Amino acid sequence: MRKQIRLSGSGGQGVITAAIIYAEAAVAAGMEAVQSQSYGPEARGGASKSEVIIDNGPIYHPHVSVPDVVLAMTQKAADKYYGDLHPEGILILDTDLVPEAPDFKNIIRVPITKIAIEQAGKSLFANIVALGVLTKVLQLVDLDTVRKAVAHRVPPHTVEANMKALQLGYDSVE
Amino acid sequence: MSKARLMQGNEACAEGALAAGVRFFGGYPITPSTEIAEGMAKMLPKVGGKFVQMEDEIASMGVVLGASLAGKKALTASSGPGISLKQELIGYAAAAEIPVVIVNVQRVGPSTGQPTAPSQGDVMQARWGTHGDHPMIALSPWSVREAFDTAVMAVNYSERFRTPVILLMDEIVGHLREKVELPEADEIEIYPRRQPGCTPAEGYRPYAPAEDLVPNIADFGNGYHIHVTGLIHDETGFPVGSPKVTREAIDRLHTKIEIARDEITHVEEYCMEDAEYAVVAFGGTARTAYEAVLAARQKGIKVGMVRLITIWPFADQAISDLAARVKGILVTELNYGQIVNEVERAAAGQCPVELCAKYDMTIFEPEEILEAVESLVAGGNK
View (cartoon, one colour):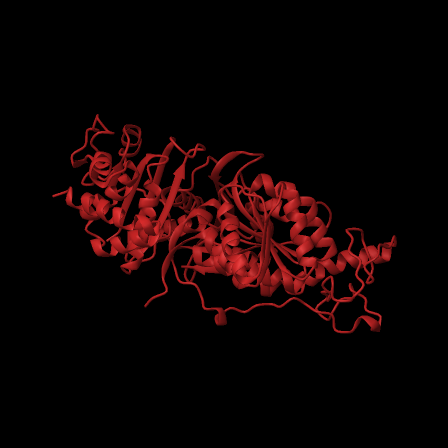
C-alpha cells in the first residue's frame, strides 16, 4: 500500500507543516509514516519541499523515489518537482500560482490560495486548504483523524479557522 | 491507546538525554542540530535543569564541562563547524576525565561546507579531532527511536567511564520524522554519577582509579578538595612531570575503555544467516543500504548487512569475523571514504573490501547501493 507524497512550494507557504500534520494523522490512524524536508538557505521565499511516505510496514530509505502524488503551490515548484511522478500519479496544482500547468495526464487544479484568502480569511491558511485537498485525493486517512491532527498542531485560537480551511479544501475536490 | 507518535530524530535525541538524567545543556544553535537545543530549552526548566545559550561553540563546550564538574549530567549539540571549535575542550574532558556528551549532527564539510545537506564526513574527526593520545566513544543511530536509545547510552557511557562521548548523528536521522514509541522511565537503565567511596578526611585522592580503572571524582561543592587540569596529573589531580606517571596516566585512559570494549561495541546484523557478501553501513545511510540489501535478495544475491551502532571504539572483532565468513564486503558511507579504512584494517586481507561513497549533498538511492553490490558480486565470481 506504500504511498509516496511530495508537497512543494516556496518557503513560508507552510508545505512542511502540512506534510508533518498529514504524517501525524497517518500515525494516529495506525500507519507507519516518515517525513523529510529540504529547503534552501533562505527561510522565506526559497524553494521548499517536504516528502511523506506512508505504509503499513516498516519504511527504511526515507526519501520518495517515485511519487504517487505531488502538490505544487508555485510555478517553480511545479516545474521542478513533477518530473519523476508516477505515470498514473496525480499532480495537484494551485490554479492561480501555477498558471502554466506541466504536460501531465492526471492534474487536479484547485485555487488553493484564493480559497484561503477569500473563504478562510487569510493566505496563511493555504497549507491547511491544501491539506484538505490532499486528504480527499489520497483517501488514506479519514478527514476526522486529519482534523484532530490539525487541531493538535495549530495555535488554540486558530483551531476554528483552520477547521474551516481544511473543510474548504476537502470539499473543493470531487 | 498506543503511545506511538510522529517524532523527529533531534527531538528524540533531546528526550533520550533528558531521560538519562541530563540536567544541563549549553550550546549555540546550528542547523541541522538546532532542534536538540530547542528541545532541551523547552524541557530542562520543567525538571529543574538549566539551559544556557552561550556566545559561541567554544564557550558552550566550556560551560558543559563546568556543569558536569559541579555534578550535573551535561550535554551540548552542534554540527561540523561548531564541533571543530569544541575540539580543544573535548581533549580537556578526556584528560581531566569529565563526563560529557557532544552531539554532532553531521552536515557537508569541510568548513561551513554545504549548509545544511547530509553527510557522514566527521567519522575520523570524532576519533581524532582533538590532539594527543586519547580514547573515544562514538555512537551513530539509524532511526528516531535509536536516536533516543543512543542518547541514553551516550550519557551512561560518559558517566561510567568519565569520558567525553560523541553522539555522531547525521542530518538524515536528525531531521527525519517517523513513527516512534519511546520507553517508559522505568524501562530505562541509568548510570548514576560516580561518588567517592570515602570521606574528605580520609586522604581522598580524586584520580585514584576504582576497580574498573575509572576514578570516583567528587563533584565540586561537596566538601572534597579537587584540582582539575589538562596537564598530565597523578592521583591527586596535580600535574607531575614524570615519565612513569605520564605513561601510566595515558595507559589508564585507554585501558578503562579497552577492558569494556566488547560490551560497548554494538553491531547489528541483517539477512546475514546465509550471506556470501556483506554491506557495512551506519547511521542514516544504513536505512538505504538495507533497502538495497532487500532488493538484492529479491534478485537472488546472498547479501546481508552489518550495521555499526558503535563507531568508536571500532568493531574490530565483528568485522574480522565477518571478513572470515564472506566473499566480499561493501562499505557504504556518505563521505569520501573514512570508515572503509577501518574495515580494511580489521578485515586484514581475508576478503576484498570495496567502497561505495557519496559526497554530493544528496543521500544514497537504494539503486546506487544495489549496483555497487552487484559489481562486488561480479568481481567476486570472476
